[in-house]
Picture 1: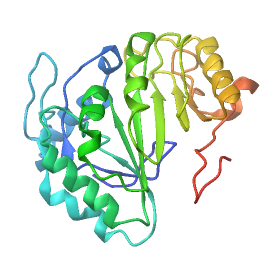
Picture 2: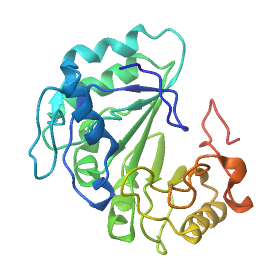
Picture 3: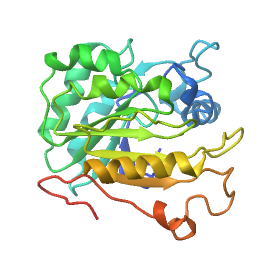
Picture 4: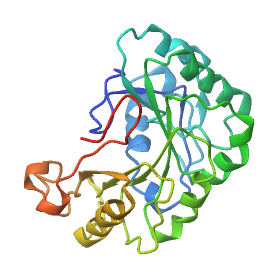
Length: 255
């Protein structure tokens, strides 16, 4: 697979682990699970380990790939890198020593910016003080509904240089969202087969919350239930949702 990414808020992907297990409703239509099944059928060597059919699937068993640890060392041009687009670095079966190795690679390549996103916020919080946090690491958690708001509280206790939320797929309102200490919030609806609708008012409320707090906000898409053709075209969004900012860092200010 190419390391270049079509994800709007990043530039490249790096998968030192692959595979995962469903843990919440946001996982129900997981693109990575579907893609892993296809990659296994194509013979891709990183996707030959099957997961538990109750929570995972063909080619999607949690697997560490030590040989992938050196990949960022070969990138000469600085880039923004989404870590584990096909997995979750804080999955319970990823050894802490391996997580440390991933962090060491990030620290050794300060020219890149790394974005790590997890649904395992509790484990993230529990091991945070046993990790060395490089300045070029942005740490995020997924928050798809009010049920998952405790993940935000876990993230707020993590000493990352940048903390962010991915509210995608947003499948319910987040009326009690507290973005204190959160630098960036990504908002998005769901697309693809079985997509669940996102009420545009839910996204608008998050944008307003970010405006009040000073957090940057990035509206990625409105979901294929809103418009199958234009749900990613920001020029077609309602005016209040035409916003794609980045967190303020020493190297980058919000657009």
